[in-house]
Length: 440
Image (cartoon, rainbow, N blue to C red; front, side, top):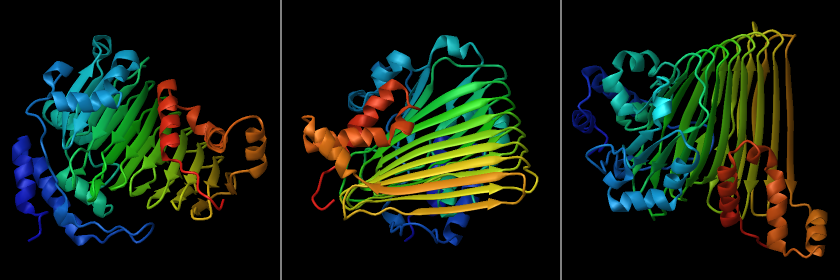
């Protein structure tokens, strides 16, 4: 029997007490999921969909105080630094555990600005017309097998609306935790930054290691208004049994800017290519990514930049590290449309291969359809510089510390874009995930 069936979808919708239009959307998505084939590019994906748990509710209500959360869930988020981060520098936070948001809070002075920051399920009920205006408009459920899967079983995620002429001095954050084997997490995030406004949104993800596969298939849609700015920072540290298959896309109006700061450490397979549709004149898109792959891991990451507006600009900086037999690839698309006159795109891909067992490929697709625009692409593949390593070791560092220092320099472009607390966390993750093996 097929576990992913109409009965399951209706049950999820009933538990959530959703309006009829949401249930019908789920059923259409389910039909598309069964009709669509697996992706015909990138790493081979071998998922037994009948073994995935599609919905698990950890609590009956969303807490606004950590004292209201069960001890084991509170301890989980405390151990990964979420509670400390909230106290020290966040304007608001949403914490999802398995399929549902379990904790959500925002500082009062940020609430007073008229900002909407809710979990997706609550937003559907409280702001149905606003939600429907943006839902499924940038990422259509029929786009691929995993957007269809998300459409059928989506749960949790974040809805943010920043009113016009509003700037936040603190980031908002969502944190996603998978804590059960064979678990699937399918959050749906919509962010709207209206004209002349700014937002920095931070996303974190983790999961413990199990012997069976888990699945993370999220969808993110972002709308950046005229002269608005949105920065989306991600540090994903999934365990080695997680398939991380995510679709993220933003559309940018006149004079707007979208920035993706995207870090991928861990997971069994990651396929993720944050996109900017530069619709407006003088719009800007930036994507800075880092992917670290070690043994039995594949990071297939990159970015997409679609230029439609005149004088639009995009920048892609991709840093990948493959270690101890891992595979880290850049896969990207830049397209400058015929009407996007005087536009420019710059792509820089740097791959560091730590040993003879590892692998890295650069797979670009760049198209320029007018003669007033420019696409520049630069790519490099290198190994640890033996001369630099020798020099550092001659100064008293052991091989591990010397290698670590070289790595920190290699990812400098990415680390500089992170809040200091996240730069420190990234350093720790890299140290924990790099193994020095013979045969460089």
